[in-house]
Image (cartoon, rainbow, N blue to C red):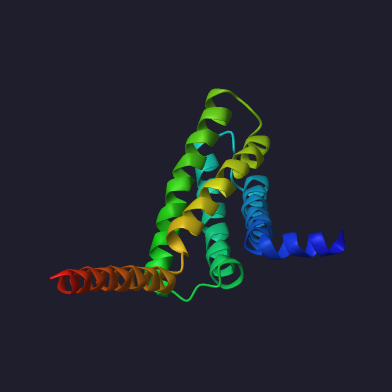
Length: 168
């Protein structure tokens, strides 16, 4: 049983780290949002609701980038290009968050804090997919795969050429 658990942890360690970092990021996002809406921004005023979202988003994305790069994906890629991609992907999910928050709070009149919490689940999944498949993928590994493919193709062409010579 313990051995099986260890194997599962090893197999899914990146995902486990992502969930933990996601929890920290979500706590920063929600904590900042609640601080802002409890002190000086009124979530019942549309623009103040969105201002609280944007400010909490900036804090959370900054924490998320640092932790995802260093803890989850342990990236060695170009920091500037990676950061641009990270913030661009997060801008896309910010738009999703703002749209969902606007719809559920402003149009349907749901509780803003409940909606904020519910939307986080959609964002965590979206952000993981962006991070795993695009932003933090190992570019050196991709280069090595391409080199191996090209090398194999060259070797195959050489074999075909050799077979043609031998049959002549």
